[in-house]
Length: 259
Ligand code: BTN
Image 1: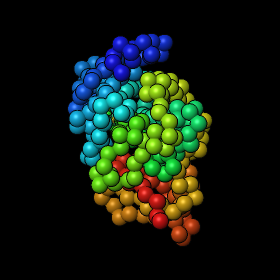
Image 2: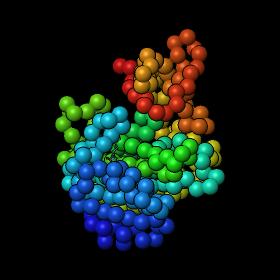
Image 3: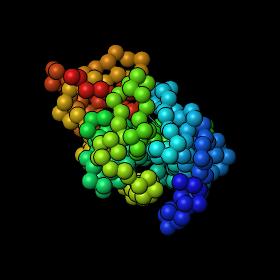
C-alpha cells in the first residue's frame, strides 16, 4: 500500500497529514520526530515494513513487509481534551476491536490495550507522549496488527501467544479497508472519550472478565485478582481472594491469566 493509495482511501476523512514508507525503522520514531517538528493533529505515519519496530516495555515488534498493518497516529490534545489523554491508548484498542467486529470477528482487549482473538494477541498498541514542560504536546498512538499468517513472529520471541487475522478467520483481510475502518472508529470515539459510552465499550471488550489474573506493575510485587471491570478513568478494577477490591492504573503493567 503506497502513499497514493492510502491518500485516496482516506480522502474523505478529516486527517492532518500522511507519510507512508515502504520500509522504516519504527513508525513511532518517525511520528515522534514529526510531532516535535509540528505535525498537525491526526497526522499518520504508515509503513509496509518496520526494521526496528518497538513494543511496550522495550520489547521489539516485528513487521514483515506487506503482511501487517503498522502505523502511528499523532494526536494533539485539543482544548478541553486534557483529561482524555490517558484514555487515548484504550481508544486505539476499542477502535481496532470495532473494525474487527464489523468483519464478524470477536475481539477482546487484554487490558489495557492488547487486542486478542481467541485469547491470542493479534494487535499491540504503543502510546508515547511528547511533553512540553508540564503539558502533553502530543500523543503518538502506534498500532501494529498481524494480518497475514506470515506476520506472526517466532514463538520464542514472544511473551504472550500471538496470532494473525488470517490464522484465526481462515480468510485474507483487505488491509486497506481495515486501516480505513480503524481510523474512522478512532475519530468516532475521540469525540466520546469523556462519555460513559466509551468506558462501556472498552469494558464490553475486556478479556478475562470474572477470571483470575496476575497483575505485575513495574517495580512492585505482583498481585492476583478477578477482573471486575473498568473505572471511568480507564483503571482496571479487580477483586482479590479476601473479597476486597483494588484498582490498577495503566503504565508499565503486565496482565496474564492465572491458569
Ligand atoms: C506492544 O504490544 O508491545 C505494542 C506494539 C506496538 C507496535 C506498533 S507497530 C506501529 C508502531 N511503531 C512501532 O515501532 N511500534 C508501534
